[in-house]
Length: 349
Image (tube, rainbow, N blue to C red; front, side, top):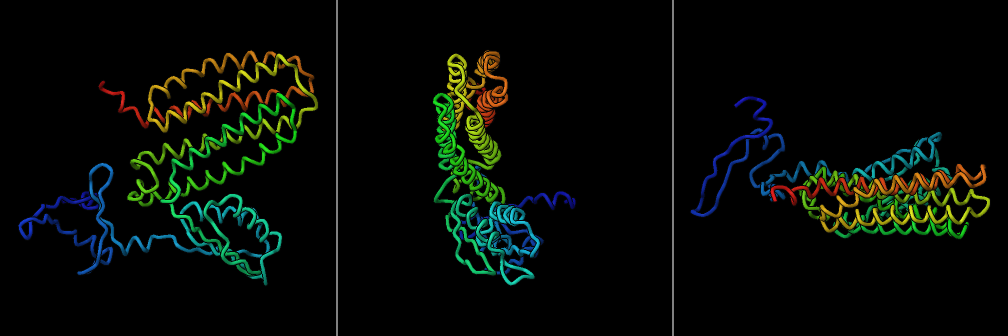
């Protein structure tokens, strides 16, 4: 057998021992590489495609990212430290020590900023040590307790609600409610980070794919793309609210009606795309994508009507119209992923 073939795998004959037990031997080179000795345990698990994997418990423990240290120098930027913490969280570390390096203590401003960020954005994470020199974070939520699908459903509900509330704020020119929409975006962002963490863990250890609520490893990429589209939908609801805050006065009733109609179509497309995902409905996803033409037509009519507003208000109005259109585009993106995930259901019919 060639060296290339050995690296990919080997053929082994199945034997029977004791009259009823099927056995195969482990490749010697693999056993030596993973320090396997007589009496050691290995994990044998069935994969979603019916195949089996053999995992060395010893090598798996070596690969587990239980604990890490982020050393903070006196001149380090708080945002850079935060980004390191996010990256460590996303790739699966369960305990993060943020410690002072070359200084007596972490700057008060940095410690307070990091604590606020952890509480607001890192799902399932608690601050277990809060001392002048050490801020230790621990992820205490098990991925089996909160699945990808349940989190994504919650994200979608919040994003749709944000969009509707933002457009209502425009109809009523409600600045206070618009500020509330902006603040809600934080909830979607924190769930998005949590989904990325779960999907990265599933890519590293395919045997947990079902434990996080998915059917097979192929779905990991699809759900990552969908989660990003849901997050961006919430971002554009936030942008609508921010542009409302910049308006000086109520805009024309006719234009408001066109914006409202555009919004209703866009958010219905978004909700249908999510429904298609959870129902594995290929046809509903296809129907949602076909509505893009209607969106383009309505957007053109709305933009033409926006010419009647005061010149200083035009940029804000055009930007919020664009955000509504982008919501429809993200719904279409989600639906395309749904088609890819479910295309086998309509083939060879």
